[in-house]
Amino acid sequence: MDQRFTDLLRPFLKFASDPGLTPESDLRALGLDSMQAIELLFAIEDTYGISLPDDELNDTTFGTAGNLWRAIAAQLPQDTGEPA
Image (cartoon, rainbow, N blue to C red; front, side):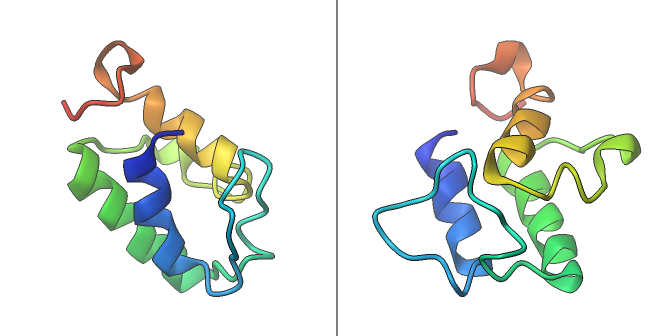
C-alpha cells in the first residue's frame, strides 16, 4: 500500500484512528458502507487512472485495505504504484 492510497482511503473511514491503516484493516468495521464504496471506487479510478474490472467489484475486494490495494496494484503498469 502506498501513501497516496492510504490518504485517499482515510476520509471514507470515519472510525479509523492513528497510527494508520494496515493491510488487515477491516474497511466495513472502520465505517465504509456501500454508498461510500462506490464513491471510493470513483476516487480510486480518478486518482490512479485505472478501471477496476467488474469481477473485482465485490465485498471481498472492499473487505480489507490490503485486498483493495492488491486489486488496484494489479491494474497499475508493472505494479509500480504509478498511474497508467
